[in-house]
Length: 117
Length: 111
Image 1 (spheres, helix red, strand yellow):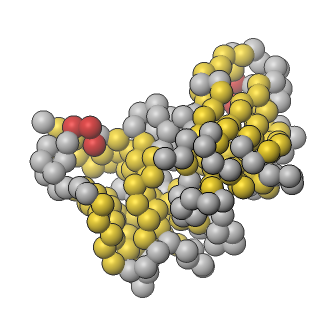
Image 2 (cartoon, rainbow over the protein chains, first blue to last red; image 1 turned 135 degrees about the vertical axis):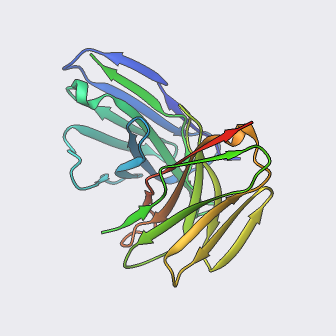
């Protein structure tokens, strides 16, 4: 099956620093990747849609200068949380849709748990 | 806007059958998906309904009624490992490539 990886799985950082999270599709090419944020016991909130070779599309209320997204290739998207603050602490999950596999399915990465002190 | 509503929590015993409902509001509709998420883990795809009716995949089935803007996930022969959160999800009304998730239902399976 399609595999999506995320790195790191867990990160603790100081307030004011920037954190980069990588999302990779390991065995398929992902034309589109998505970044979600999930608070404990809550649903997944779509933050942005990442398209290879073009600018990301951000959901309403998500600061694009705060959450920088780069989709450099068909297998890699990165999310950088700039000048992180404690309220940015959350579970960040990426997903990918394959160009060739089931178009109705999103394949999720294992998530990155961010804690900002 | 677009919204998908689910019950927050359901409890059932091992071996039983449980139904998790999802009602949605959207001006355009491209189908309903279901995902399972264990605590601390990533969501995994369970099923997708594009048309009305029942889709069966092993112990799990999913149903859709577009006229009622309603769907459900049916879990049969419940096992302890089925304890997880279940989310319905639907593509955005303005972009089929974007998915929005329901509020999620926490399923507790008891011995």
